[in-house]
Image 1 (cartoon, helix red, strand yellow):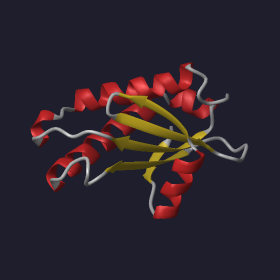
Image 2: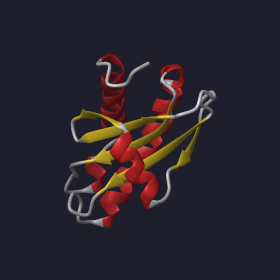
Image 3: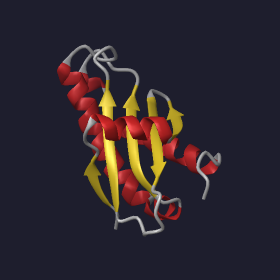
Image 4: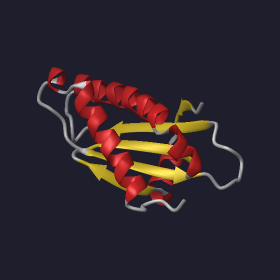
Length: 129
């Protein structure tokens, strides 16, 4: 089972955003980064971000981050075999639009976009196996 841990620090985010492969679905962009070693993947670093320009209110940004973290944990469990096979050890989720009210964004909406972005990354050969 892959353990999801937080991706912390500006340098870690910057490295993932520079070297990772991108995939998009609706307002969500994911960046996936492969590990360099041949060790089996047991941990995945997860970074979640939404800009102040995207959502002015902190309550909206916090809700988006919370929903993304939960959706990513579910997605890692569902797509675990594919992530292991492709040696993905870092994922960054970037949310690019925000609702006017936090209650308008639902878990199912976020989960649908995350699953679609992962499937797109896997099936369009965005990542070498």
